[in-house]
Amino acid sequence: MNDTIVQAAALIIPLVIAIVFHEVAHGAVARMLGDPTAAEANRLSLNPLRHVDPVGTVIVPGLLALAKAPVFGWAKPVPVDFTRLRNPRAGMAIVAAAGPMTNFGLGVLGAILLGLLLRIHGGVQAPTGVVGFIAQNLVNFLQINIFLALFNLLPIPPFDGSHIVEAALPRPLARGYAALRQTGFLLVLVVLVVLPWAFPSFDPVPALVGPPFDWVYGHYLSLASLIAGG
Image (tube, rainbow, N blue to C red; front, side, top):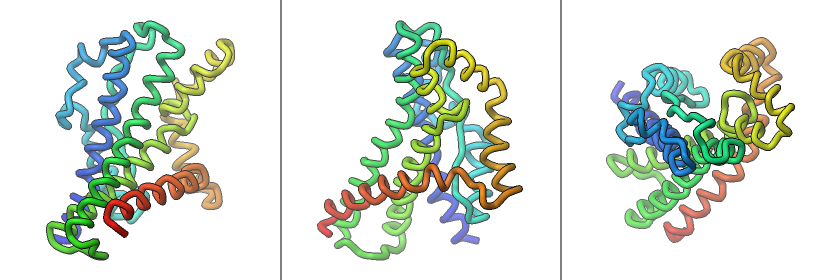
């Protein structure tokens, strides 16, 4: 039981940090580009309680971790009103990209901290105790931030990638594409959960996210190893 609690903590802590910074980045960039909606709603705080969704941030990731399935989650979305942006089309893409780019940046920070931790403790291969717990948090922090960034860049409404694609499309196509957002959650549920369950050979997340995840994760680990003196 204690081991299960430690493993859950080593997943939930980095997940909450990654999600909170992801959401705050959207609101902060939106404010820079003319939309103060998130600031008006007091959602630019790093206080997790303002962003945590009990189901998406705690229960679902915890159950996925216990089931040894890929861990992901979500927070309460930071409100953004694209019509208040100084340049709505370009601003929409920039605001959408802010979340995933923040996660990539946090991944770099995690790799640096992991490298420093291993360097301080002699580059041990399997640290234990408090050092082991911190190391596991940092490894999970790397993986969660990379996965969260890439997953959100999928061009499926309502993910961030869909806003970037919408901004790049000609206006008539963009309007039709944006209309998909009304059934976005159902579309995500069908494509990412129902179809893979019904047809195990159809599993788009590993196929689309897996290769870039491995590439980015490998480079982050190389950075950590370089700092650790490996």
